[in-house]
Image (cartoon, rainbow, N blue to C red):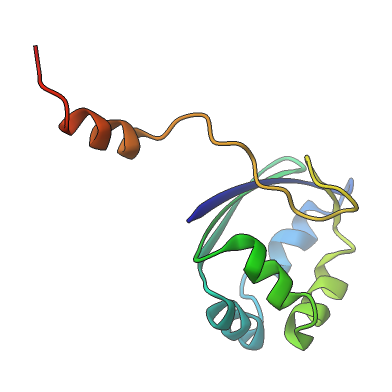
Length: 115
């Protein structure tokens, strides 16, 4: 599954956030592998972050990471830069609703007859 997230940085933390993400800790990457997170890409525009996560089950991955020592260390380290996740409750990430998907449209169209 693919999940998109939108988060907001605290003012003035953009460069530090970018620097922290030059390379995440190896034990965190290993934890992502264990919980079924295959890819995680982040784009930034000003203080806005847009994430695309490819995983087996996002909610299950978050639950599994909740008490993972590598994730706890990472959250303590990176949490000081992140103000909030848009749409989330209590600071938790909340997937953005998907509006459109070209691949899905093409797949749906391939089954219909052309005019």
